[in-house]
Image (cartoon, rainbow, N blue to C red; front, side, top):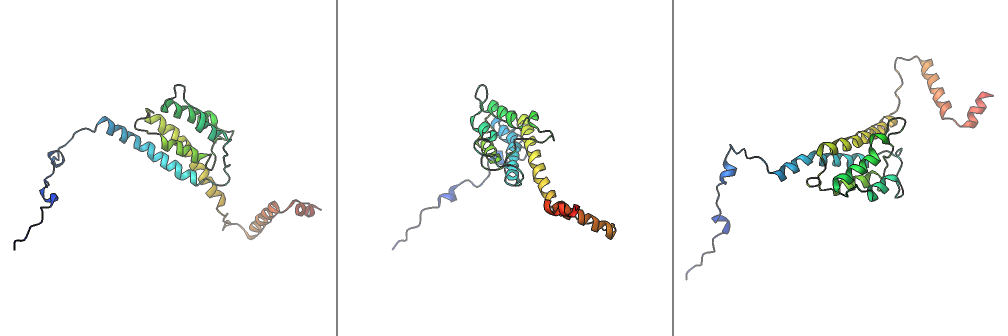
Length: 198
């Protein structure tokens, strides 16, 4: 009785030596143009990811957007002059987050929470194929960084507003009691304040 041998494993016939290109430690071949575009857009993708994270952390003090608000309307309907991705991105961000869109305190006025606010903006940015969009990377970084700086400010200001005040350890007991009574009067109702005046 002759035993049949199993067929050879196809993996055993593979060449186990690395190609010359991979094995060459002096391989200084420059990346292709397509690879350079992908590498150049990585900072933009990182900024979009950061914007998404900050947008989800916006405090309740930031108004929530509706479908009728400017943010949603501009992101969904405004296009560039020649309808290219680059010009549409540029126009939308200039309309919503340009330097001329700051309020009297210097804050960007079109930052809004919710699905029709910054989440809509982030979804739009994620839909762009940045490596082939033709948007100048430095221009996109500048515009995205402006919005991220505002988001960081809004998120940080909410954290500091929630932080409880720590009484000054060096203040006298009378000053601490005076400060506590002033705080109580500020928080008391109008009726209680009127009664205190009488």
